[in-house]
Length: 326
Image (cartoon, rainbow, N blue to C red; front, side, top):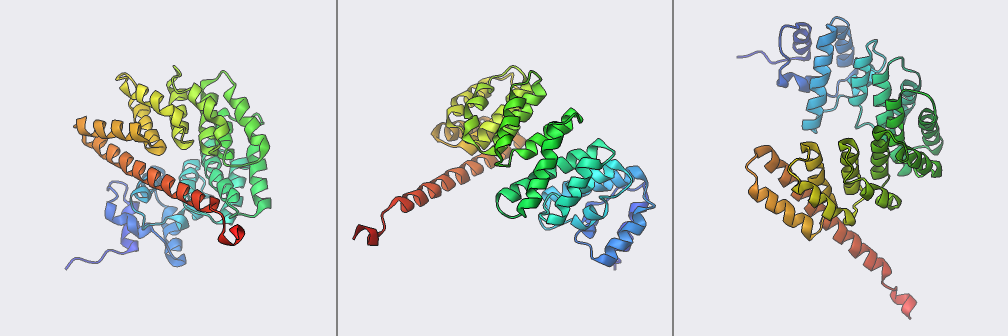
């Protein structure tokens, strides 16, 4: 009878860099109690640097595929690791966390870390906490501190990629000065800034940006076009549908732009979008594209059902109360 695998066995295996890390080992790193985490950290000190990154990348991939695992304990424990790439991956392991204490740690990393990679990841995850603040799930003063930190970097002289990331995270905020920052980025001549502004517009879910987004759907720069297509879907811009179909009819379009168009159509919905996606599904023989189109059609169904529910709710709210009629 085979010996039952233990966490100690898994950690001993981790120390041997000549061996692959089996998929079956990844569950042992999930939801560690205090004693198990202590054992992990003691082992971690003796793991080779490249091996550490391999494990963390495997955990991140598994986190996307298995909804029953959580690696938050490891993520929190490695925020202070001496390796910047480890710190960056540790932040990504915390993507599902809504712990307000984490927001404070992220602000510290975002503002003071010596390396760019963890600062970029912290900026991204801070956006999720800004969104929580907008949903009244965070202390208002803490939300303001986060937004102030992000604004200070956008307006500062930091690395431009970090400033763009901060702008995109700020887009969830309803503070009036954020719109000015987005407009300023959109008006720049640098395509990367324009694309960042478009991503911010999409995440804002503010229809004030609809015309700006539509104006860039046929831009010659693929970076700008891709960002505009994604934003059109997020903002549910019905006027964008004919242009998205036009883009999809161009066989020379890059694959990432085409798939972004497909998903944007599934977010916007409508008869034209459904007809096109179903026809595309009937024509394709590519397994990966087939699976993606099936996911898109499922999302389109969800979109349209949600829209019907919204309309029904609005109709009920508009109906006069019987007591009022009397």
